[in-house]
Amino acid sequence: MSELTAPGPAAGFTVRPAAAAEWQIMAGRSLRLTRRKLDALLTSLLLPVILMLMFVYLFGGAIHTGTAYHDYVVPGVLVLCAGFGAALTAVQVSEDMTGGIIDRFRSMDISGAAALSGHVAASLVRNTVSTVLVLGVGFLIGFRPHAGPLDWIAAAGILLAFILAFSWLSAAIGLVAGSPEAASGFTFLLMFLPYASSAFVPISTMPAVIRGFAHHQPATPVIDSVRGLLMGTPVGDSPWLALAWCGGIMAISVVLSGVLFRRRAS
Amino acid sequence: MGNDLAVEAAGLEKSYGKVRVLAGVDLRVPRGSIFALLGPNGAGKTTTVRILATLSPADAGRATVAGYDIVRERQLLRRSISLTGQYAAVDGMQTGEENLRMMARLSGQRRAAARRRARQLLEQFGLADVAGRRVATYSGGMRRRLDLAASLTGHPAVVFLDEPTTGLDLRSRQSMWQVIGELADCGVTVFLTTQYLEEADRLADRVAVVDDGRVVAEGTPAELKQQVADQRLDLMLADPSFFAGLARKLGARAIHLDQGTRTIGVATDGSAAHVRALLDEIDPQGTAVQRFTVHTATLDDVFLALTGHAAATTAEQSGGHPEKETASV
Image (cartoon, rainbow over all chains, first blue to last red; front, side, top):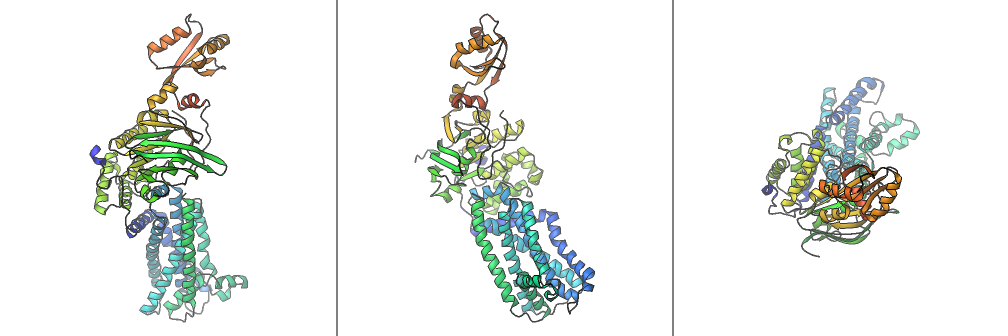
C-alpha cells in the first residue's frame, strides 16, 4: 500500500488552483448539492408556478389593474420566484458554516470569496432555470409580452442583477444564522417583500402607510422595470432605481459577507 | 528552526474571554513521526491544533509547522498541511468519490489527476465498494475514513487529526488505527489528539500529556507508562485496620487509595509471577487481602500520577467546537 500514498512530485506542498478554477469547482459543488436536495429544488421551482396560477385564477377575477391580470402579474411572479430562489443560498451557506467542511476549506486556504461566490453562482443558474419555467407557464396561461430583443435583454439583465444582489444578501444572512433552520426562517422575511410591492396589486390600492414602504423598497422598481420592458409600457426611471437598489444591496452584502466569514470561521 | 522538526511551538497562549485555555504550550515534533497530544476534555487539545493549523490566532508564543511560521507564512503553511476535525468535513449529498475528486481539484490537481488520486485513496482506505454511494448512507467509521482520505488528496506534509476515533466502535477504531499507522510509513507527519491512553500507546512515537493548558509530561509511550505503571493491582482488604497499616507501609507505592471500599492499588506489569510476588510481599500471612483485581492503567491513572489530581471533565471552549464528552476506555 505504501506506493499509493508515496508523495508525488508535489509532495508536501500543493499549488493553489487559479481563482477561476476554484470558483468553478465550488459552484459545481453547490449545483450538485442543489440537484440532490430534491425537495428544496421542487419547492423553489413549483411554488412560484403555483402562486402564479393561484393569483391568476383565484384572485385575478377580483383584481382590476387596467390590463389583463396575467399580463400584470407574470412579471411580479418572476421577481417573487427570483427572491425565493436566491434565499435558498442562505440555507446552503449556513449548512456549510455549521458543518465541519468550512474548517477543511479554510485549512486548505480556499478563500471565503470562492466558497461564497460558488453558492451565488449556483443560485444564478438555479434561478435562470426557474425563471424560464415560470415564463413558460406564463405563456401557457396567456401571457403575451410586447417586447423587442433589447427590451428582453434589459429585463433579463435587471432580473439577474436582482438575483445576484439577493443571493449575496442571503449568503450574508447564512453567515449570521446559527443554523440552517434559522437561515431558512430569515429568508422567509425576504420573500414577503414582493407582496408589499407592485407585484400583485397596484400600489395605489394599498393603505397609505404601506404605500410609502411599497414605493421605497427594491422589489417595486425591479418589478415595474420588468413589467414595463416586457409589456412595452413606459418605465420612467424604474430601471435605474432598480439597478441602484441592487448595486447597493450587493456591495453591502459582499463586504459584510467578507467580514462575517472571517469572524465566523476563526 | 531545525529542519528535522515538523512542528515546533514555544509558549503558545490562548484565552477565550476570562477562560485561559492554553497557558504556554511547548511542543517539538520530529518529521515523519506520529505525535499524540493526550489529555482530557478541556485540556486545550483542540485549541492547540486550531492554532497550529492557523484557524485561530494565538495570544502569545510562536510556532512553525512544516517549516512555515503560523503567522507570517500562513498561506504557505496551509498548503502543506491538512486538518481533520471532530466533525466529518465531507458532503453527505455527494458520493465518496465526488468528495475526494473535489478536494483533489481544490488542492490544485487537474481533472484527470484528481480522478486518479480519488480512486487511489478509495482503494487505500477500503472504500472502493461504496465509492458511488452518497456519504449520507455511510457508517460512522466509513465517514471518518473518507474524511481522512479527503485530507490526504493534496499530499500534505503534516496531517492534524483532532480526536480521530472519538465516538467510533471498537472495530472502526481499530481500522482507523491501521490507516493512521500506514500514513506515517509514507513519510507523512501525523499530529493527533486523543483522550485514550491506549490510542496514544498504539499509534504514537511520542506523546505529550496536556492538562489545564500546559504540557505536563512528554516522552515515548513506554517512558510515560513507566511513570504511571502499565497495570494496576487493586487489593481489597479484609478490615479497616489492615487498610491503614498497609497504606502506611506502602507509602508512595500505593498509587490508588480508597478508604470506603478498603482498596489499595499498586503498580504491576500484570504478569502472574509479579502479581504473586506482590501478594506474597504485601500479605505474607494471606489474611489481609480479601480479593484482588488487575486492570489496565487509564488516562485517569496517568493524570493522577503526573498531576496529583484527577482528570477534570469541563467542556473545552474552542471557538464553538466543544470537545465531545466521552468515557475513557
